[in-house]
Length: 277
Image 1 (tube, helix red, strand yellow):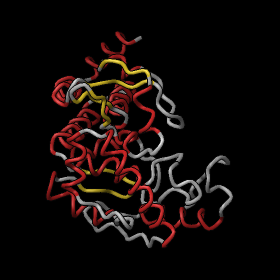
Image 2 (cartoon, one colour):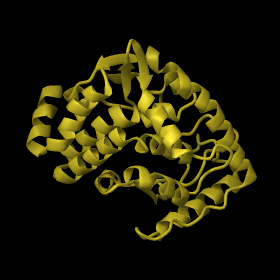
Image 3 (cartoon, one colour):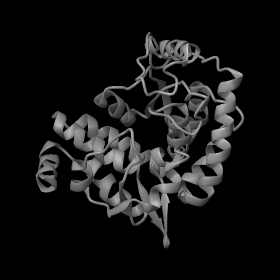
């Protein structure tokens, strides 16, 4: 298994990191669902990156994360001083909300990634970002997948929303409708913000796993929750998100976005697409 890294990637010119990426990606290639996830033998340096990022993010979460996400952090109890194995994360998570992790070598096709959420599975990479820039990653690593998503998946109400997104992704048939469903996921469970009283808090895994973005999100273009707008707004995965959509409460998110995922079909999506353009 050879992982392609762009020339701008922090690990591009590091042969040791590249070899590690290839080896860790290889663990996922032949994994079969229902069997234990192969162990990744992390180095001391990799564990140190996890410990540093975990410690710094915890301070920011106390200030910027929603109460439900923080409840998930407490409930899940991830190790803070070392990278947990995905099998270990699954064993912590499954008794709480029924979710388990699946290893991914890299980006997973949309229909596969979202579809298995309906069955309580979440695809995750196993590698960690390059040690030279511990607070930055150009693609989803285990910090994002586990600190960002597993803590949310440990909360019953968020976990229910992930399942609804998965069911919606399976239900729609056209690629355009699938893209719409995935964009709504992006602007909510990846980069969603929510009012708690008078304060704007983050619940999206992308914000909550980004050391820099979590300090910046309140200054972005914050728009009201709007399905047509979310499903048709362009985003750049390589930059901070400058447009964010605000839920007025978790109940509001469940009513609008959960209600959409629970009932949407191609006809509903195409009407929303037309309204958004």
